[in-house]
Length: 235
Image (cartoon, rainbow, N blue to C red; front, top):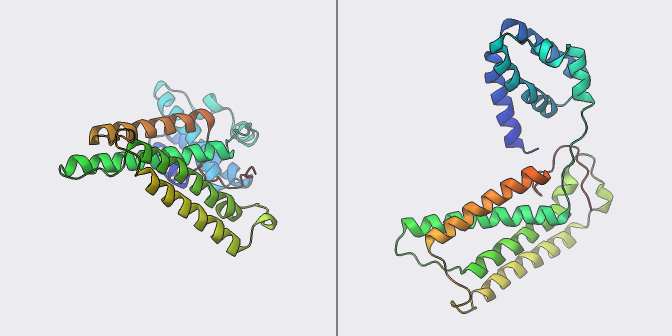
């Protein structure tokens, strides 16, 4: 799970705990001690607490206690420890798609905003160029994960890591190919490589963000730059 998401969970958990009754606060205190004894990481504890605190705050208004909702502390601890592991999608295709949609969203919104603010600005990227930039860029960023970032994760098999000079050659070649293809695509006639108005770019950017969010939720896609702690990457 992404670091920023965990930070938000921790912050939200603190605010929710302040709203608990004394009895429910004691339950959460005991649950934390139990999870500490089980050697759960801070990230895992934050997720576990975030799964129950919103419900607890809401249901305590009708007089329900944490024990009534989630069982004893030991029962809840067992449920957390034995929770079926959520399947995370780390295949190359989905990681490339996630990267490509992010790039498309960022450039679409950035160029669209600049076009609205700077009325006389000329949009230099046609729609084909924009999609090529996102598609090839997604592949380049996946290569960065494949040859560099996945080996920085705990438990990674670093015996498969290439020599640094090979990694540099591969990534440099990929970046060069990215820039070259974008440059050639700019030569495509404007009748084909249509230059969209700022509003059109904003729509594409917003749509890319929306599709990316939907796919991450539906398939639990792991971003190539944010592999969860302890996740074993697929080859």
